[in-house]
Image 1 (cartoon, rainbow, N blue to C red):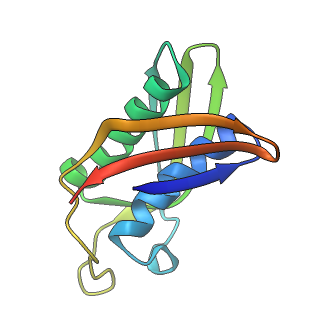
Image 2 (image 1 turned 45 degrees about the horizontal axis):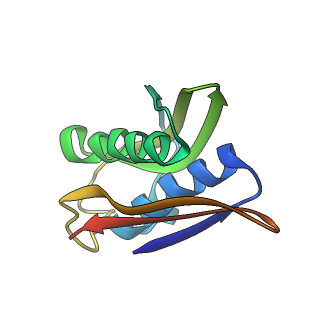
Length: 124
């Protein structure tokens, strides 16, 4: 279970993407050499977060791309993710653990006094 906080929804979602990649590698070793983007849509905040994390994880699982920084914008049900990073280089990026998937089980997005809180599970 991963718990993440943010001042608003875009900040929260960006921080969730960064938390996901921090489980994989030391993000400080990742250069901001390339930009990738993705768009998703979801009816609820939990759906938006789930689809966003699934799309972000696909960058690594299918394309071996690591994220150093992430920026999210939200317009209604549309969420746009823009990330900066680089392809995996095993000589510089030792992978900490294998993640099989991001799951929707127990996913939560809540308003908190200081902003927003999200919880999500990854299948390792």
